[in-house]
Picture 1: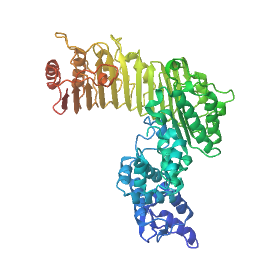
Picture 2: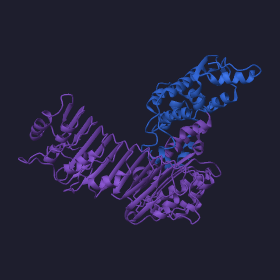
Picture 3: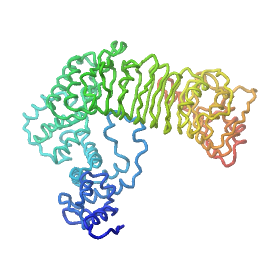
Picture 4: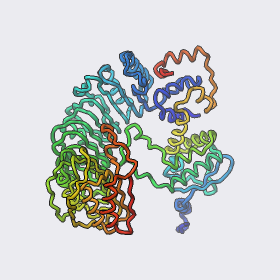
Length: 186
Length: 442
């Protein structure tokens, strides 16, 4: 959808032409290219929206050096799925409880989207979402991780997240004493 | 993992689990203190043991915990503060300090649930919520339970408030009107069990309001100006309700006590002219005042109607048929019957016929069908007057009393009652159009 504009406005033309393209091309740290709907990218990512508005999008692939190809593929996949999904009609009209109001529960497809990811892929995606300022994706992925922690013992959580316990027995006892109420039913 | 990401993850866990992460490793030691959502709920913190003898001890622990955590957050932004605890054992000074804390932390979501326990629960709420300490300009969601409201004289409203949830709050209609007087951003309003004993007239427009729920407030009349309203829930007596200039109402859920269906049409007609879906729940007094059918359409947009009707004795068609008649576009009808004394078939009584066509009615579902004379009249009326009926579901079991925890559950029938079978054969199967799919359930 190139738009023909008068000569002498090269810069202007370039921007308009770019603004008229439906997609943007993103380049992962390992050099792979991905196309994503410009509308969805601008709507879902504050960083990409800023780049699109500021004209710093490269037609040959905008470099995202911090994001690996697997994570970027998931980001792009999420954007495209989001662009196609019908927003939930329930939204505000249903009597959502007060406490969940600030965060809208993941929709069915979002749940499936994060459920199929391996632990490593999920963590990479969280960091990509954080880097790109994708509030909703960050919320959905963090929600998934919090579900993986819910109701688990410290040992189980350490195992899932590969955390090394570097406390001495005495230190552990001290924390438990200090925050006794939180460990009440242990 | 980055610390701000960890903060988001932790904010989705109950506070108790958040605090427990401190034992994972030294890196996690103080992470729980960066969680921007603080929820102090005694039932989560102390679990079931809370009502035991150690309550006094728990109260002190609760206060100490909240104070210790808030101390950590001093001077930082806290998105959300939830306090849920029984008031009887808390000190007013602490509660006031916590409200003060939200003002200095630019808190957007604040919930105070200070439910009294035991005999204290019977008296009116003792804690007067200190609106003068609240930063009313930054608050976006406010939930109050079991508090008293006494607005300061110079109250400027809540310019950013999007959601207001009041339950068991002692508030006068005048104070509620003042609270809502400058709430241009308000989208969601719920006022339940706040006895106002009078009229509630909110003259100030609420241009963003999408959801309005008013229940059991003992009002004598109600008025709102909410042009964008999409969902309206009302429970209480049949009083004059005036929702000016609403045009986008989609769903309505109405429970009226002490009202005849005739009263209901009068009460609801000017409110619900644009509603497409209505759930109407009522105890139907018998005998109903015969309500003459008039050819005026009241619910002109209504397509989906759900009726939850409790009768003392039998169904009264003289009120049911005109109620349907007031919704000329109705496509889907669900009627759930229940009766305190049971529905019975009396042999030998003639079945009355009413002629009133329902041109668009496609899907009808009737539960609690025991083949009483009134029910037979009603279902006969439907099959004879709905020319495009696609699906007719007739179910014997009583869905209403089965979902009511107070009433004794009736035994689930294993077969269809012989009378019901006979009636279905005589009045439904022979008359119903061959194009209609008839579903019989027991």
